[in-house]
Image (cartoon, rainbow, N blue to C red):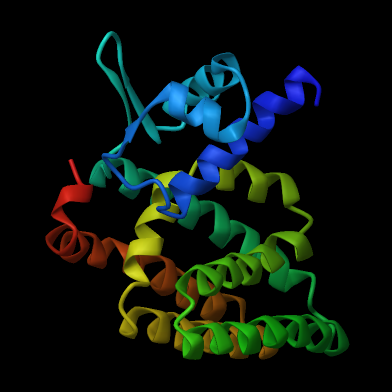
Length: 224
């Protein structure tokens, strides 16, 4: 494997493990152990950790060690603020492209397929798959609005937001609320009601603000 590909693979694998809480907030990271586990030298691991530090996902303490960053409520709120404001603009553009009923029905059918799979994940208690499908559903708005770059950009800058969402879906009630809100959003899109869709998505995406303090109480060791 070329050196550049090795670096990308190490970074992507570590980032995925951090975002999915396989590597938990506050967990110590040993470069030698990670290099041995991944079958690479220390150099690509070190480079990956530096990138993850820039992502606010890893803390590097010179001469002391490296750990997965604890959850910082201020950073999470800023990442969520970026997500909300980008998505609401994208959603408006998305609905504008669906002015014809046939286009709305086609788009709605795609969303319904994702919602069915998401409901199955909810029944199965598979929170990680539920969240993956949550992202897949919201990604449809960006794809329809021809805003793939916007999607990739916000995704790369909202890793802490993703981690808190994983935590929030550890209780059954929150995924159920999300599912209900997704269905209401789908109905608004079918009605071609842009303002209703935007208002529903605003409420849906803003709900996390209300959950952060409760999650900190439930998982105090994960927060700064």
